[in-house]
Image (cartoon, rainbow, N blue to C red; front, side, top):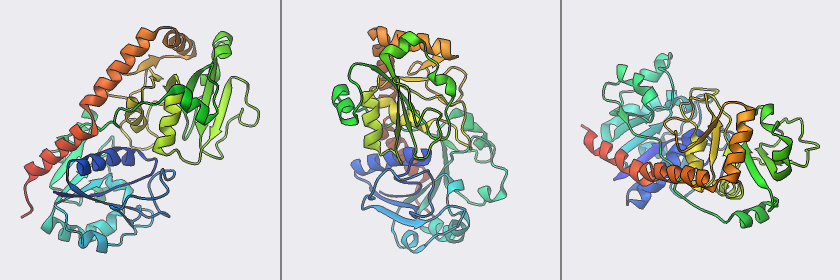
Length: 347
């Protein structure tokens, strides 16, 4: 089977986090894969996670901002299925013009990333053979697409690294607990308001984009480390996870139309406990795989228990690894292939 996918790729977007493990799993299963993705000057995400693309990646489209699409790579590639990831972030007008030719020779599937039914009529102009969503909260799609298919969001594979080696490589202290905070578009100042006792034995590690505004950036206190990274590669992201004692994802909802925290699905299998706000709806269906807090006082107690009680850490990581095993790229990729087979051949 030859699977083509039009999607964000090698960027820090949630769409790429969903697409990349799938495509790699399909290749490992023996499928031929072609990726049609954004050009380097018009892409979805804040930046690129790799300097060079894989040899099966073709940059031939833009976003809706430019509506750029070179149709030739799409129309001259002989694929059986075209998977379109997150239509909103692609050149919709250009795709609509070549869609009848694609439908004539291949099955078409849209993976929807919205958390509500879009109000824009253009969203519904495509006669997809299949529609896929990854969270039960997206069941509203069945009102328009009665046969929409729920296929869970794929996790990144389980992987491990040596904590001391990672800290040495990153030039981080070996004798402190490290709380990793991955900040992209905003952070809550209260996360730095830990107790004096906890500060003596803990480093708050903020990894932020270049040019990010933080009060402490020019003169951080001794218990805070601020690292500016243009964009984290998958390898660099994992190095910070291996070095840390926990990761805090302080997020309540997407700034846009996202449904879940793709960062959590990427980080879950790296052996680093993840701590999130109790009231957040952004981390479903994860439950026992995460630690939760309500406010800064409870966060302090939660971190203290995590650092003191090895059983809490073990139970948390066991649950996380179990979830990753059930939602591995291989399992989710197979569910997609089964769905493609159900759709049959075009015509």
